[in-house]
Length: 414
Image 1 (cartoon, rainbow, N blue to C red):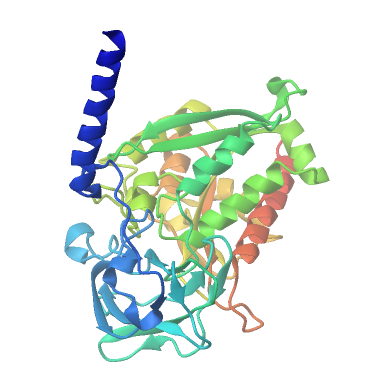
Image 2 (cartoon, rainbow, N blue to C red):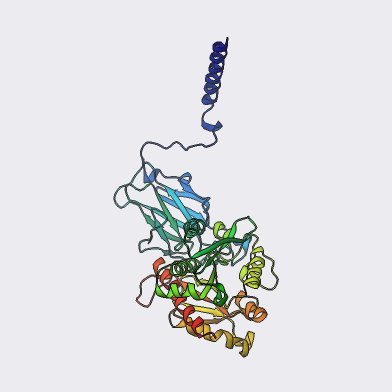
């Protein structure tokens, strides 16, 4: 009898499986898109583009011809002029089973929205190593156009308006950083409207007592489209964790608190200067309408650091520089507290342009309310003095140079 029951049960399973299988893969939890065995580039269609990647998305993608596509970026009605994807998108085309011939390319065109002025497209086959698209890119009357060169044997091609910084990179790096003996803690200081965590690293030499150490605060990413500054922050972090003599000395003298990306929601959504509910965090240190500004300010009040540098970047600017508290806004006495910091960092980080900060910006408010000096170093992915476009590595190097200036500033404190 037991054997008969087992046999009946087995038959039932087989019958159910047959019924489920007859209704196609639609009943499965994961549906895999059936791909033709071999395709040509001309066969690619809009379904071959992934438009739900973090760090921006494509809107209204249409095929204009063989290997030619037109798309739009996010309408500024959603987030306002400074919140659109004016300079910021990140996409990927699936090239599996595509037969790529010599000189094959994808011809891309963006419907030109108001304000889209800073674009220098890049492409990658692995989302890690990026290249500038070939010359010939640029704007005509209605579109911004660029070509993506294809390479035989590659399964995908990524592309972006400028060197992107995928937000998941922060968390992926944090897994490794947690094992570093000089990383005391990695904590969540708050969560954005979409519940993405903003993390903060605490870097110091654990063998040296804290009582004589200064506190330093470094932050980036309240404007997540300013990716040059995110790469610069990565360079600062890697330098601080290195065996460079300056870094080792810094860890002995200071506790360094680092927020790699404040607006993780904005970085994931692809907004330029807005978080998920449309607030520009940078101008929110009086009204505190955004969660991010509130928990960042709570962090500053708790730490009361000796200085606070908030990294930013000018999109494809021609020079590095700063936004900082201005005598006309904060007065000569308060500005005198910032000037030594500017001078110390300016010996290493090129400050070729200075612009006055606004009253409701983070560093100005910190100086006025808490007496914490600071400013915004401005990176950029534009052309250097040699006429060459700046790279990711250029930004990382500049990030390490900022730390050299911080060291000099700390040495000058009594």
